[in-house]
Amino acid sequence: MSIRQTTASEVATGVPLDIPGGVTITVVATVPDSFEVRGERIVEIHVPEHGDSPPGLFMVRPDVVGSFSLRFTAYRGGTFLGVLEVQIQVSEETADVGATREVGNSLDVGEAAQEEASLQIMYDDMSRTFRFLFITDAQRQEVPSRPIEGDLRDRIESLIPQFDSYASASGLLAPAAARKRMENEGFRLWKELVPHPIQKAILDNADAISHMTIFSDREVVPWELLYPLDETGSGLGHFLVEHFPVVRWVMNSTRRRRLTLQRPTFVVPDGSPQEAESEVSDIALKLHLTTPNKVRDRQVLIDALGNPSFDCLHFACHNTYRAARGSRIRFADGDFEPQDMAIATVTCPLTATSPLVFLNACRTQGSAPNYTSLENWADVFLQAGAAAVIGTSWAVRDTTARLFAGTLYERLRAGLTLGESVSEARSLARDNMPGDSTWLAYTVYGDPRAKAVNPG
Image (cartoon, rainbow, N blue to C red; front, side, top):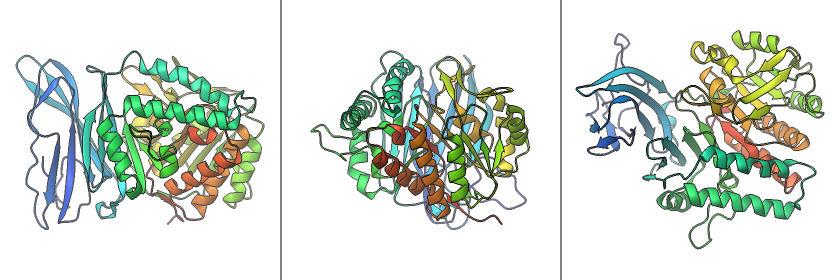
């Protein structure tokens, strides 16, 4: 594998990146545990001022027959640049390379931040382990987790009702007790799933990191809940998302740094929460809108998604989640479900406007089994071309959700980055209603340095 300089007349295969000469790119190979790795999984490739780079060599040997996906991810420092996925069909005699899929980040590689960190968390079904890769400008650590005992989805499903109750105004625990319970659950997640070398790397580098992006292929885990402590009980003293902005991303989608928020559409079906209309009014005021555009019918929403004119799609509604079936949003003319976006994930109609999609409803981050993978709202909207998606891992309190959303849009319009805006919205929601778990529920997919700018 090498990084090639191409001219306008050449058709290059691979990930298209605008890479200046004289920089070093880190490429990480993610292969199934059934493959024998002969050499390094992480290779540094230096890009010269002129000409192609020397090749980076990855040597792997399959030990079983079948169809497998190999992923090669490029970083500059801790900034994700792009990913190349290669499908390999292994038989008793040969190993044939089939289809490839490549995705490049939309940013100039020269914009990569030294203070950015990435945490890549990939699950291997055969070994039942997560493989963690923590990468910054100065450090790289790749370590597998301990084998997962039992069904991880069942464990998460048993956890969510507790956090639903903390978001309820009628919760039984006092605010301080609810906060302490959340901290303990966050520490259990940190202790049981995150390997010790990764824990140490995060704690050692925490004060030098401005923001972190998590790349994961198991979206059932609420990674925002991580509460870092070392083996002595010392650590940050708060949740990871309280220390710096933490966002997520799906590797097979292109990250964008440009949000506009000039033409928002609000999805408010009949029967939405009592605070929904007030939430829309608040956001319209923050964005200086006189007459907000509202969608109340499923078919109107479907039509708008197929030919979008909006650059922000905000849902203020109820979302129903069931582990076996997944999410659905109820309209008078039928339910809207992730499966309704299946074709859009390949036709990508939302790339025309690259909207921010905010599903401000209960547990919109919940995943359900598809034929060969897990699927949720974030996956389908990002694959359809959204620039960023915000959802929730559990129930949210209407009043707190309204405060979070209003603060987020206000900060974005004031020029803060997506990561900074989310952090300030979390802090205000947390401080306004101690013990309410709503502020911790939000999952954010996007580039943490994305900003709202005027179109043109």
